[in-house]
Image 1 (cartoon, rainbow, N blue to C red):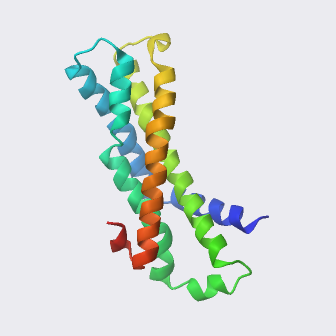
Image 2 (image 1 turned 90 degrees about the vertical axis):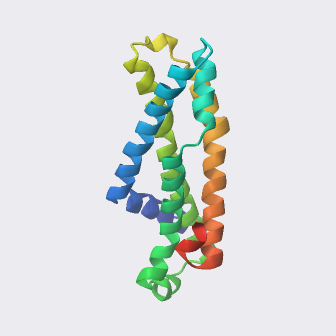
Amino acid sequence: MNPLVSIRQFEFRYHLRQPIFYLFAILTLLQGYWGHYKVSSVSFSDSSIIDTYAILASYGLALAIATVLITSQSLTKDLEFQTKPYIYSLPISSRTLFAGRFLGSLVTALTLVILYPLGIVLGFIQQDTPLTRIPWAALLDGTLRLLVPTCLILVSFTFALTVFFQSIKGAY
């Protein structure tokens, strides 16, 4: 198996075993639901498409905090447990290790990103909106154009600062 793939899978599985991941998953889902509730209660338009884009335009505080914590934790656990000498004695390069850690953190953060629009869908369902009236195209388009690039930028920036400062403090 390719070392890059195995490192990415290890990182993703590591984060899925952490209880904090599930706490952030619930918070992200609830934040999407709450965003739908708040925007639909103060909206001046009758268009659920506009409301959907308005909710997706805000990345969400819980999602941003979760992304930063997951990404910075991916790198600092080596510093904390002092596993660098052992890892670098294996037949992998430092680039492969960092790329695998980055991709594992990105996949974990994107898993949380998917829960944000799902919370919006739950808000529509709670309001007894028929499934055919939910703006599926706007949810997909907004997720791909707004949430995914923001997640990529946030993971990249956090990863770079954590590497640069060699500390989780650098991510904040």
